Length: 105
Image (cartoon, rainbow, N blue to C red; front, side, top):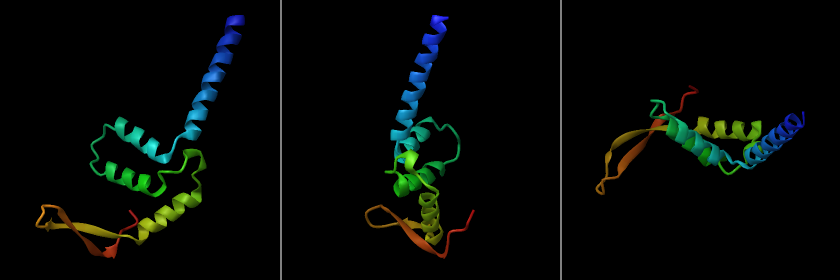
C-alpha cells in the first residue's frame, strides 16, 4: 500500500513538473518542437508555422488568448499573396505581390 502511495505522489510530482514546463513554453519553442517531429509530406507546413512563430512566437503558450490569434488572422487577411518572378542580378529570388489579398482558405 505504501508503494502505491509513493508512486501516486511521484506521478503527481511528475505531472506538476510537466505542467510547469508547458506553461513556460513559448509558441516559438512549440513550433520548433512540432516541426522537428513532423514527418508529413506538406511542404508548406514549415512556412505556415514560421508565420505563426513570427507573429506570436515570443508569447508563453499559457498566455496566448483568442485576441492574439484574432489579430494575427486579421493581419494575415490584409496581406497580399506573392509570386515568384525570377531572380535578380545577385541570384536572389524576386517575389512580387499579387493584386488581390489572400483568400480565407
